[in-house]
Length: 178
Image 1 (cartoon, rainbow, N blue to C red):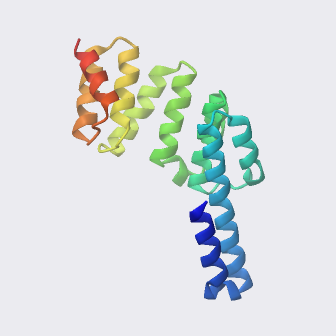
Image 2 (spheres, rainbow, N blue to C red):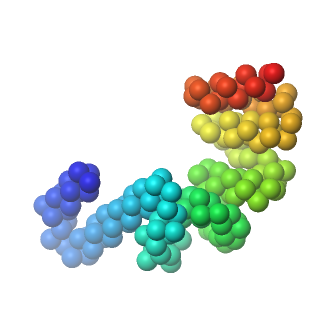
């Protein structure tokens, strides 16, 4: 809330606010951030339907990475992974190459039980971005769920090598090692 108030003050006092076009651009950007923040808060509170209502007025904006990522996050939490995949399939190529959105695709595939496809998409992402902060841990989780303990352990080791020092990853590694 304090960030929004400060941003509103900066917007009101900004020299560009005198230019109506610049003022409108700034107002829309601030509105986008506020809606995304409110949607994320509603998802965190366990209400993805309310989160989606926050994002509905922005449905036509498919060129904003943060917005599309939040839409995908909400849809996954809402139990609509097939909608994530449908939307991912029609993304502009530059957005489809985003690590954030690729990870949402992987989560959607996993939620639908299409784990081999999820692993293939994740492997491709990790080839493009070997230092991905969350990819190896997710790969380890999926492999562990398939009973592929040795591969899961290797993935969790890569996660730790990439800087993942979370307790969850350490415990998952220990479990995979048996």
